[in-house]
Image (cartoon, rainbow, N blue to C red; front, top):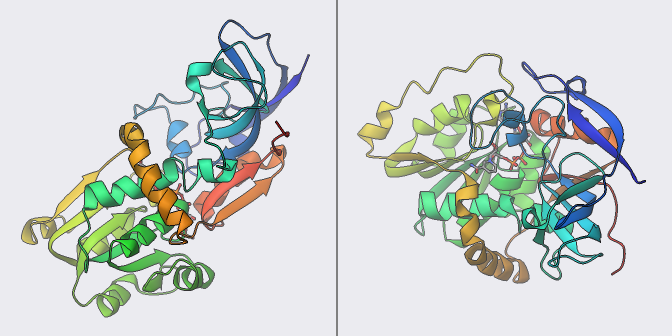
Length: 337
Ligand SMILES: NC(=O)c1ccc[n+]([C@@H]2O[C@H](COP(=O)([O-])OP(=O)(O)OC[C@H]3O[C@@H](n4cnc5c(N)ncnc54)[C@H](OP(=O)(O)O)[C@@H]3O)[C@@H](O)[C@H]2O)c1
């Protein structure tokens, strides 16, 4: 029998999520049933939304139950299959979770397109890229010459959203934590300007850098930075509510922005979205993103950790801002097919 290491959710976190909320166990991989596929995990995706999945509350997906394997996006290789759609050796993607092996119906898996690496499938060519693409293009509807402010700008989603805005002819300013991330935004990701929110006065810097005010604010963080951005809107601005990571580990909900009337005064719009609603438009995104990558117009950073024992600590990196670009953890390399 094949042994399967798993990280189970043991306790619901109040405040910061950490290793104490999980337990590592070893089980045996069960025999495959009809139509089932056995995937060996190669690479795990880490996403701020996982913090929401462990809260016992209604959301766009049910919460992870206590005692259940922690849910996570993953790429793996098929090592056994009772499904006509998958053969041993295929590279596949699904919600495999924090475990070495994932048994599931074939319908829950997607084949990785030829030439797409696990890192890209979970990042720039996966739901991360999809979020940035439709969040910016569908919700914000950028116009060449627009001034775009992006928070969480050196992260997986923000860095791609900002670069798409540049491709669309906008002026792009990123907000990120620390001088290294700000330098990367300017020197590698091609942003026009960067604000280090940990060491600079964000309001003052936005006023200096964007005297014309903001046509678009792509919000990944919420909290006081959202309030600051709302105070700097141009007429008919679009505010994209992609996420609000500053509140994900908070013990109490933080007070909402105190300047929502500014949306009224500037005739602006603020809209949230969830990427899963755009999955059926994946092909549209892949066509554009594939071309931009080929043309070298999009830079994508990946922060790759290793070690099964380091999985819970890797999730925490998102909340302490240790990651630059997409946070991943690699458990193995694909076997040659
Ligand atoms: N709507 C959707 O469908 C959808 C889909 C995917 C992601 N999202 C959202 O998009 C956002 C980014 O996700 P991602 O996967 O790309 O993660 P990410 O940006 O790669 O990583 C999270 C980053 O958030 C920043 N951060 C952490 N705590 C913060 C705080 N208190 N205040 C300000 N910034 C903080 C850190 O960067 P610094 O070092 O700069 O602080 C960290 O690197 C999240 O809010 C996520 O929930 C939404």
